Image (cartoon, rainbow, N blue to C red):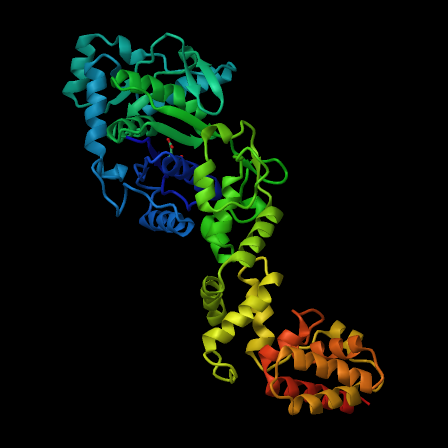
Length: 491
Ligand code: GLU
């Protein structure tokens, strides 16, 4: 039996990069050790949870390729996997804690608790619950019960010092005197996070809890609960936080934090997974580009450093560019095509695609453009000159390359040569451009730059001869002639 691990998001927000990285580490651990990856939705906060958020989280995990073995939609022997459907279990567990002497009823009103806290604060002291209800005489309890006074259940924190070995941070000791008798079941019969998380980790036979450092201070409470429920604590691994470039905790101030947003901005899931994996984890050598298979083979909790990781957007962009460069052209085209369709550029009925089938032509275009794209969304702009017949000339391109004296005649000569060139392939197109330049007594570069501006409107493009072949003879000649006319009207 391999390890059983879980990712337990609260659907009170989208899947942010921190959550996604925790999910990834947990998933990698399960896959590395032939374990089970459980997805559990912690939606006991009814007011702040929403089904849209659940759908968004599932969608984000799917996009990243983090499939779960048990959980929503997948089912499994330890369901239900939504905490909102498990309330009876938490109530039963709380009752068991009371019966076992590990917890007690607390009838204190919110007002009393607030007043006591404020009083202590005024004296500059931190207040801990004073166990008022632990010492209630039986007659008083009977009276309160007779009027069905609202009651919460509080855990009776034992006084003994204890410790646990965190898989990342090592041994952590804690003094329970710093922990108040915390509520496990509220007076509305809803569990607190501490109770539901522990009851579920026990019920779902979770062997390793991998979660963010922000939960480290909760873990002593959880360990006490595991003990009180007669269960063995899982191994805990608290993953350091992700910081922005300014070393502050990653937040919206730093840009996108939602996984869906990265998808929208044109990042590939493979690149995102690779990038997230290296945020705080290292394979122990200097590898950076790693496939999912390699990540699984190399993953270990020991490889997670104790320090916080910094989210470096330039590195993500670089990595995404590397993935774009390496993706099979069919897959890349499939990822780019929806963006071109959205931009109204594909399929473009106004453009007569000269090479059939159209898909093969699009593959060639995507292949030609990919060295210049760091994100999928950049393909839209790069592809524009190929998918529309309106050439938008960049002013600086015109200034730099279309103001050469006598250029109209040179371009007209090239257009004339290309009009009858057959076949219209790269070696012949190149020979034609260079030959025309030589005949006209100008440098090849002059004609190459002018031609680039004529057909793309831009200063920069992929290799010109490939560009011309992909555009085809007719459109190339037509665009050259357009520039000839333009130059004629200028003089
Ligand atoms: N629902 C908790 C959260 O989203 C998860 C806690 C845990 O992993 O134990 O922070």
